[in-house]
Length: 357
Image (cartoon, rainbow, N blue to C red; front, top):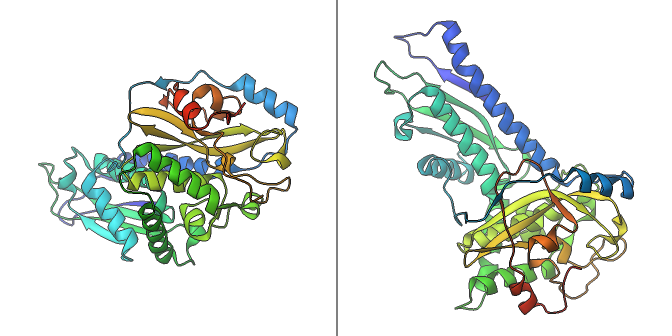
């Protein structure tokens, strides 16, 4: 990603001042890009021994901050709603670029304008799973006048992510949106949020097969995306979880994606990886203000080779509490606002005798 400043002809800043202005932004965006790479790497298979990995996972699990009260909005609009809307429109209508008046952001400096653009891109990557294919090419911010006003527009240029540059990504986007709408249309009218979430959980388990090829590859396919789960009907954990979150967002049900490590054993989702520690992703969904963990991937039954077994839908990890999840899941250390999931009664009422123990 390249960052540029557009210089006005009638006034030039000293070179040293420009360097001081640009460097912090480049460093900030480099951190965002590195963060995105970490997200993508969150599902790599570890071939180390099972006992050593499990022991390290248990010993290194930090005491992380927990957020009891905060319920995230179902559909957030990023650091700036107008800027976010412009980004989404340009990314989905094929223009791949747009101009905007920096004054609309009400920032005090060009550096703050640039940070807002960078933060909005980061929000886009993290909060809109259906836009997994979008990347930022560069953006150009003009200098403000003596009063802090701009007489030129800023320019933002986007492009398909390198991984998908030769793929029909806009067609993928349209098909993903259509598939999601068709799934939601099948939910009975008058369903509660709990019933809607359960319907989506069961639909994904029933219509998606675990993508072994994607798991063992370098992640060059679509199995880690919402498109893979909803359109191609094959995915790994990030695909399952992204699809669940996307459908929850479309129905205004608060939901987040979380990643970390999972330890497999004979009771778990992937018996052919017994005892190994693997990067993994799952969800938290808020139902009537109460958070619950959902791991759609581990509720999809597979055989000893990791292939779909055609067995019945499981609910061992549907609407579970911290105690159940943390027996075999651990969070990435970067999280600072993990929800507290303490309610056991919903899972026990809906799925008696189907606990994860």
